[in-house]
Image (cartoon, rainbow, N blue to C red; front, side, top):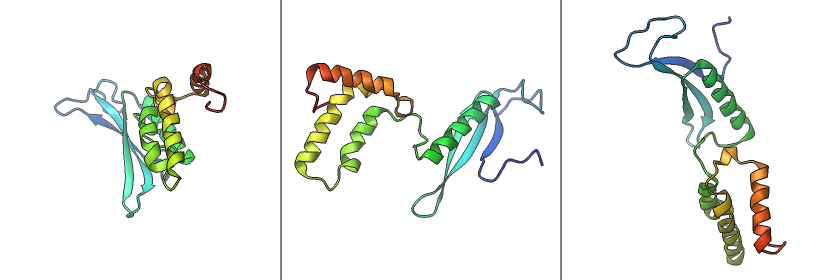
Amino acid sequence: MSGHRDNGAGSVYFDRRKGTACRDGRYHKGCTGRWSASISLGRDGSGKRKRVRLVAKTKTELLAKMAEAQEALKTGLEVSTTCTVGQALDAFPAAGLEGLAPNTIDLQTRMAEMLRPFLGAYKLRELTAVQVQAALRTIAEIHSTRTV
């Protein structure tokens, strides 16, 4: 059946704005509204299903977002598109350094703070190796090779 999506592929539907009439019921070309999708991200620790809702103006854009989210799920990346490098650097000492010696935690925290002015504003999912290399070159002008 060509009208059904595969299991686990998510749901795609058109959200019409309340109080508006649909002039083209089949393809929604003249409607005021947006395309929506919801995909399953598996289950959390208590067994409750986690779902994410995506929205876009066109169906093509929505399908591209869904493919990107499903690929991120396969690779283990967080689906959130708003997380910045600065937020990840804030979370790093609490989650990434637990159980280490205090001096190690202090050193890693200072290194993370060194990166913040150069990379903190970038979105984590859009960060490229070129941006990281540029930040490391700038740090290398001031600090030793060991620090970099």
